[in-house]
Amino acid sequence: MRAIGLGLLALVLMAGWARAGENVPRYASLDRDKVFLREGPSYGHRVLWIYRKKGLPVKIIAQYDVWRRVMDWQGAVGWIHASMLRDARTVIVTSKKQAPIREKADPRSKILALAGTGVIAKLETCRKTACEVSASGTDGWIDKKNIWGVGASERFP
Image 1 (cartoon, rainbow, N blue to C red):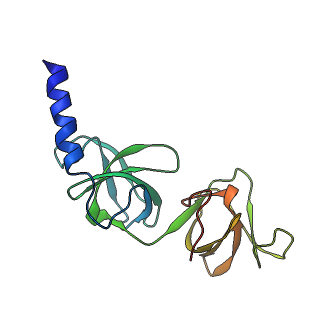
Image 2: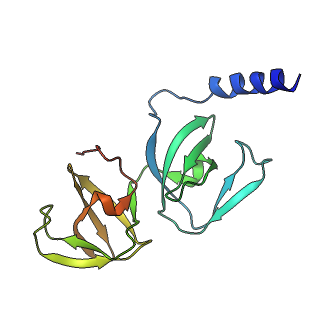
């Protein structure tokens, strides 16, 4: 009986997951300094985590009505109300060592700054192996292997 109930719930959820014009998966960022990650897509579900970092990148992996199922850079998964997210792209530095931000996408170009683990930067553009970012008044290029918030093969614009 429980299996039938869970199956029906899954069908209902899948019916509302994708809205026209919104691709899944995609990246977004937190729009507030305090955002609740919930167990399910409603205010009645238990809070799993409270984020306190505006601009933190998240990967939207599913959607249901006004709720987005997201994954963060550490692998935590849960639901966030769409009003708490924005389309602005950001990345977080995940390198254990300070990651160089360079003048150009070329890994031999001049180092402008070093970014530590947890630094959040605005994402400007991406090429095959590096992305242009801006953070704390520094604009430059960082190797994709040192950040989370952009797909490995993603290039834009």
